[in-house]
Amino acid sequence: MTVETENYLNSYSGDGVNDDFDYTFRILAQSEIQVIVVSSAGVETIKTLTSHYTVSGVDNPSGGVVTFTAGNIPSASETVILRRNMTYTQGADYTENDNFPAEVTERALDRLTMLMQQIKEIASRTLNFSLASGKTNQFLPAASTGKLLKWKSDGTIENSTYTETELAASVSGAAASAVAAAASASAASASATAASGSATAASGSASAAASSAATAANAVAIVQTPLEFAYTSTTSPVVGDGAAYITIPARMNGQNVTAVEAEFTGTVATGAVTTIQLHNQTLAQDILSTRLTIDAGERSSATAATAAVINTSYDNLTTGDLIRLDIDGIGSSTAGTGLVVRLLCGV
Image 1 (cartoon, helix red, strand yellow):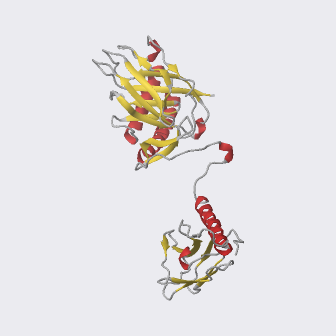
Image 2 (cartoon, rainbow, N blue to C red):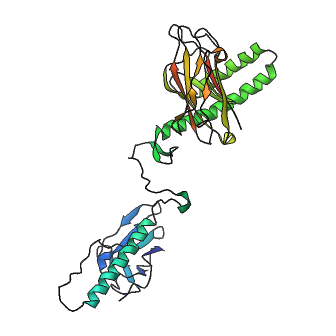
Image 3 (cartoon, one colour):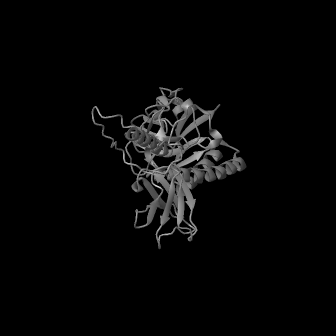
């Protein structure tokens, strides 16, 4: 006998009345068909031979019939899946110098073909790369609760360093900050008669943003026009990675970081240099090859002895990139207050 069809699975909708469901592929034993009933919620239940159903048509090239027993007939909200499910064994045993066992050999070849079809069905439900991608030997990292999968710059996959909850909080904070930024822009437009008036409006915007969204414990607000990390006028920076986060919006996709600057809108830092790094957490790469600094006693990075340098290999921004503010050093005598860090972006 031959294997004349590539069929290896059938799917039907139940109706609460019909108890017979055809399978259109060959099996070599009743136990080699798996019967699954799927609820409307997508819950799959594997049924048991004899207890829930019987099988006819074993070894028929065209298949046979699965008959559900009384009390187990699939309802109208359920789906029935019938699939070949053979064990991965080889039972043919040849005796040396016997006549060629054609029937046994053909049956063994049939079994191998059916096992290949079974593997094909399983493989068809897995994630695959396109041929054009050129990807081979890709492996998923170990599962980590709450973490997301991300692509690294070298084309491999790893777990994100932030959790789904942290990302959602960052996005929510960014949305709230965008509203605050719009209000700030409107206020600035109405009152921009002098630099001091503009600064007062910006300080009020930072306070409003801080009260509605903080992505770090030290009350950092995020303003995204331009990309801006703004501490409240009474808040001092604290050394550590992840002082705040900004998620790149779709409108900035493809733009590059062209310049960075920082200033204290409250008291200036004294005793030591304030040192700042900007990190693209999505790419796991620093944006600055030379960090942004504000010298001790100075108000702005504009007067820094060492200018910040942007790493042009990682200055490109893509929708959804998570940009992290790292504070690498603060004033040893006075940390300063109201730190503002800006990323100027363009194409």
